[in-house]
Amino acid sequence: MASIGSSHSGKRRKSKRLRLHAAPRPPPPPPEKLTDPIVGDLKVICNHCACLFKFRADEKEFGKLKSHFDNTYCSKLRNEESKEEEEKHSSQGSKGTCVEVSAYTYKNARKMIAKNICTASLPFKFAETEQFEDFMKACNPLGHKVPSIEIVREIGKQVRESILVLKKDLVKLSNKVSICCDVWSNDLGCQFVRITCHWVDESWAIQKRLIAFRVLYEGTRTPAEIALEMQKSLQNYGSDSKVFSISFDNQTVNTYSLEALSDALQPSISADFFHARCLNNILTMCVEDALSALEKELAPIRNAATGISFADTSLLRKWVAFCQKKGLVPRKFVLHYPGFCWYLSYRMINRCYEYRDVLCSFLADEKLEDAQVDSSQFEACSSLHQLLGSFYRAVEELSRVYQPTSVLVLENCVKIAVMLDSLARRDGLAPCVAKMKGIWLKHFEEIPTVFSTC
Image: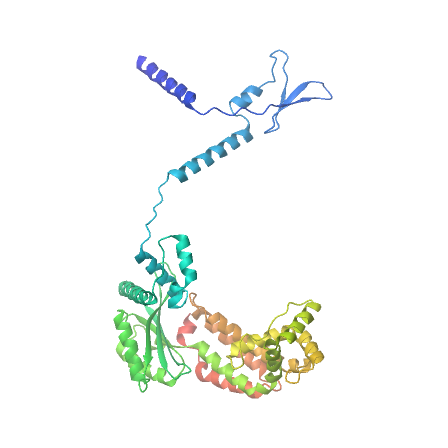
């Protein structure tokens, strides 16, 4: 019992010592004295929580006012004190915590600059500019220029490291992969092949990586050469036995290369799933034929849009003032020069339809010879606008990168087939729709098994 008592006394002494060493609590503000007009009793009110305390004549004090402040019964005062303590602790913690700050090294700076230049598509000489050097010195006095030749070497080193990591990931991968191969030519006549690999990782997220980018020299764009290039790329990443399907653009040379690939890769499930045609490429071929057949009907709207979008400064100022007078936001209709692809043509037509009344009245007032359009010409192209809109929405839905699009193919195919049937009977569109239906049925008279299964 004595030991228990001594321990309690020791605890009490410690608590007293802690109280003595604790910081003194700031005195509370003096309470405001009030007099009840009805009863005439003297009362005080807490300036923090607005609690009233009546004066007791026998005790000669205001009830529990003293204990209200001493024992921090005031909720608002207690909250304020706790906030002050939290802020104090947080400030002490921020000062006392050790933040690991790595020293500036030229190697780390070169590595990060090369990575940012590569990902942001900046020129290699960006790190040699005076503005960037001033920025580096403002961040750290030791920072200085990095030569472009070192940037090129560092980017090559990082690419090789990334390829090594990708090889390890694909070799360990137990799932199947889908391959997309795209072959095209630039304006200079150079031919390229690009091979991308798609798969689903362990967290059910779609991944996409570029595994090959090659130049096809003259005479090498044959089915055998393309099949050999794809086979080498897949073997390089250890994925030649994991291919589920291959997607090509709709060219004859690519279709014939699948025969050699199917013999070499041995598809695991079925040959019906092995080849998946690029639906967006088929949609593009259909729409390009439609635009070429309806160029006469589309020419007035195209000329009006380009006439305003690429006009001189004085005409643009008049257009801005005219739109503001009508309560509309001034805008251009063409963002690129003529000769662009079909979906840019649809964007141009769509913008013109939103401003068609204002556009017709403005061009009539200005009397431009090469850019005249009226409401009847817009009405003649309304069916074309509706047709292009359906194809544009389908291409947008099917062009998603990190979202599954195979489940959307069947729905969009049905919508396009219904649209073509409904517009085939309209005047002026019959020959155009007949061409589009011929191309569509050539590739999708029967829905591919891979899309109908999804």
